[in-house]
Image 1: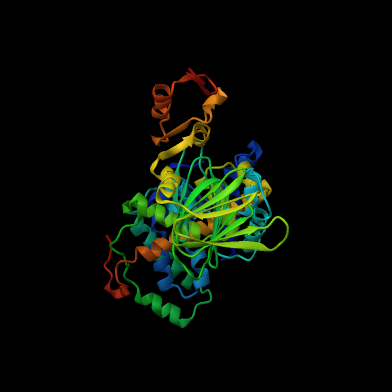
Image 2 (image 1 turned 60 degrees about the vertical axis):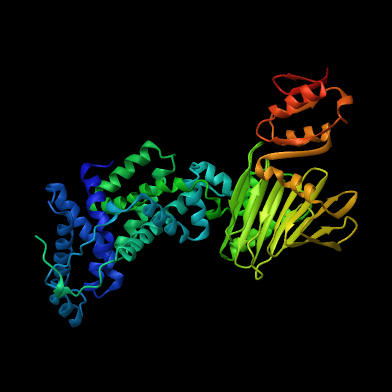
Length: 190
Length: 321
C-alpha cells in the first residue's frame, strides 16, 4: 500500500506533529477542534506533496496550518472576536530551533515507547505487551488471555490510537527545550 | 471533530485487522478501497501505522518481566503447575479482583530451565535469584508484595518496606518478611527455609485444621517443613554456606552420601547421573564442585573412589569397578 509519498509523509511531516499541535493550540481558541484542524492540515499537505514535493516540509507544514486557520476564520465559523484578534497578532511564522526525533537516540525512543505503553489501560496494555514485546501472534494472544481474537483486534485498535496520542504528547513535552516565545519574537522562515 | 474521530476509529480498526494475520483477499481489497477513497482516510491511517511501526522496538523489552502485566488467566492457560493447597488458587482470584478494580499492580512469572540461574529485580526493588528448574510468580502492588514459589529454589533479598509486608507462598507454607535475606527450597517432600540475614515468620497450615502455627526464624536458622512435621534449628556457618553455595555456581559436600550428592547434581542436569550399584549409594564424599561442570566430580569418583563412569545417551551410569 505504501507509496513514496506515504513514506515521505511519515518521515518528513508526521515527525513535526508535536510542534504543529503546539502551534495550533496557541492560535486556535477551540481546543476540541485542534485534532480535526491538524488532520485537515495533513490532508492539504499530502495532496500538495503528491503533485509536487515541497522543498522545506516543515515550513510548508506550518504555512499550510496558518492558511487553513485563516480560511476557517474567513469562512465565518463560530469565532469570537478574541480569537480573531489573537490570530492576527501572529502574522509572523514561528519556528522553533530544535529538531525532532531524527536526532534522538534509540534509547530515548525506547523510553518514550515504554512510557506510552505504561499509560495504556490494563487490558489494552496486556494485549499490546504480548503482541509487540513478546511477539505472540494474534491467535496466541487470544489463547493466552482466554479472549476472542476479535477482542484482541479491538484492543490493538484502541491501543494504537492511545499510543499515538501519548507518543506525540510526550514528544511535545520533552522537546519543549526552548522557552515559550511570543509570536512577534519569532523569526520568519525562507 | 467527529469526522476526524470517526475516520480515525475506522483507520484503527483497519490497522488491527491487517495486523491480525488473518486478512482475506476480499478484505485487503476493501481496505485499499477505503484508504484510497480520500486523502483524509489515507493520512489518518498513516498516522496510526507510523506509531504501530515504532512499537516494533518494544521487542527490546522482551526480558523485562518487571514491567509486564499478565492477567490471572494467562497463568492457567500457559503454565501448567502442580498446585499444592489453596494458596495458589487464592492468589489467582486475588489477582483477578485487583485487575477488575483497576489497581496498579505488577504481576509477573519467572522460570528457569534446568541448569540455569537467574537473578532479577521485582517491582519493589527486591532481588530474587532463581536456581535451577524453578518457577515463581510475583505480584507487587501498592499495598502488598507477594511471591509464589511454585517449584524449585529461590534466594530473596527483600527491600525494606514496613508499609508493605513481603509474603512468599510455598504450597501451604507462608513466609512473611519485612527486610531480610533468605532462601526457600521447595521439593516434592518438603519446603526448606533458610535465613541468612534479618528475620522471618513462617506459617504452616496444620493438616488437621485451619489454625496455622507460626515459627519465628532469625539469621542462621533453618526450618524444614514436611508431612512428618516441622524441624527448626540453628545452622552452623558451614551448613549455611553449603546450602547457599549454588549462588556462587558451586555445590559443597561435606561427608555427604553419594546418593544425596548425585541427587543434588541432577537438579542441574538434563542428563542425570545414575548409581547402578546400590553399594555405592552410602559412600561418603566431600568437596566443592562447580555446578556447570560435573567432570571434576566424576573424575574424583573415578580416581579416588574406584567408580566406573559410563556415559550413555540418556544418562551417565556410575558402577562399582
